[in-house]
Image (cartoon, rainbow, N blue to C red; front, side, top):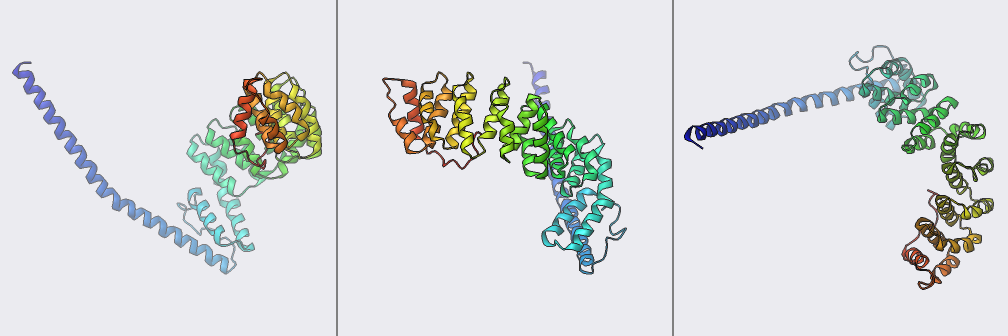
Length: 360
């Protein structure tokens, strides 16, 4: 490298150091300026929130209706009003406040949320969902079901939670339809229905009775398994020997939530099913159901060719108490090494008492 190249290289390093020094200095200066500005706006926002809360408290104390123009146009927005309402909810549940709350949502927040429903920005849509979620009302069903079909996951799942709170036939069936379309992401939809309005269960039960589509029946059974009754058991019995494997498994899991001797008699024959997944799930469920009449069949499955069937059978025997444990202790490594290993694995575990939901 000649002296000219060396000189150029040194100048380049010098300029680079100067540039980094300027950048770091500017960044520090900007941070120092930004911090007091940020603190000012934070204090200002907190002060506005306190003033707004005081105004509402005064209206509640004097039992006055919600007046027009209480807040400026800038403050009459969902991100400001919804947290404010939730804050008031924590300290006041009076009948007058509930009327004021209803008036606020109906006359101010719902019209804004309806407009935001059809925007392209997901951040705006999530504001609409926040409004619909905290004051469920069937007058917003159209907008909620529109959001339920959104392609953005956070919008779709949040809308499902809103729809489930409505407790209407259209909302419950729309969530089931979304479960069918999202076969690998079904949990959020199921949880929405389980935590939503209990009325949804009756609509889903009606659909299970009429709909013949296998995936629809799977979705219905997954939800109804947490709200079982004898009628649902009768409906699930139709699917225990269906050609659709996932439907058979869903029916087994649903019936296992019905703590009745009839469940044991329905599931024991499935320990001989040709599909190993069905045998494994049946064994697991019978363990949770404490089906001691299945001990002989479960003991035989310790020699099954499928590892999952052997393990689930061993765990089921452990859950059946002393009788099942004796079967596990009798396994001989020289007679069947695989049965012995499954038994030893189950014996070393601290098995729960069966209070967890069976079949999951």
